[in-house]
Length: 286
Image (tube, rainbow, N blue to C red; front, side):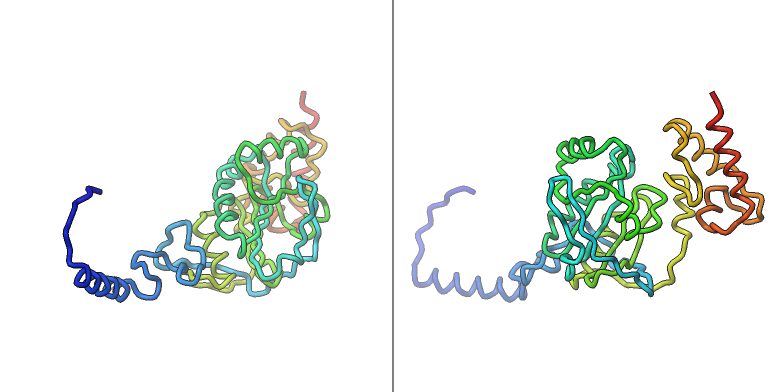
């Protein structure tokens, strides 16, 4: 700014300055800044991502409580779900080889940094390569939230992970209120966290019955299929099996693929022998 030397009458200048400050304060309102984002008046964190005027959230009307699970992080520390009461929790099942997972990691990093007092992000790795692979990825991408390796106990606490990424949203009372399969908009994740922790938000909430449609829509990303043992296959064979199961239709009349039928109706007695035959064919192929 140019340094213009002005000669002023000090008493008159002081009165003028007070009047100007009063006018600015009146225009700015309670926050003192007319352009300040919502939520900053009392030190609340402003939103990271620009949201439309109204965002519709869907939470299940019968949320399931999460066990008071204690998990060991890759840093050798422990994180207890019981200790997160009063905060929203985002439990993200992912893997370093999963493209959509890698795409959403930067958003999760930003959310964890913006809401340390309101949101806990926990990454549950499904990497078969072990903790070393995950640690290297976390270091490269600046992951700032706790990471744990998937265990049967964790999967029992968060059932139904058939595709990656899958994110469970836990409310401040320790109940699963939403499950997202596949890549999710960061706007949606942020508005969910702000709503659950009573921060200013632009959300309208609908309470719905749990359904499996989201799993069906993402069956093509499935890494596990109910009742199907893919452990006998090599990685390349597993990829081929998942491709076949997500393209071949089930003849039971459901008008779904074999994979979708197994996810939607585990009681179907027509798809299992067909699926077993597909697995056997691929396993026996040279």
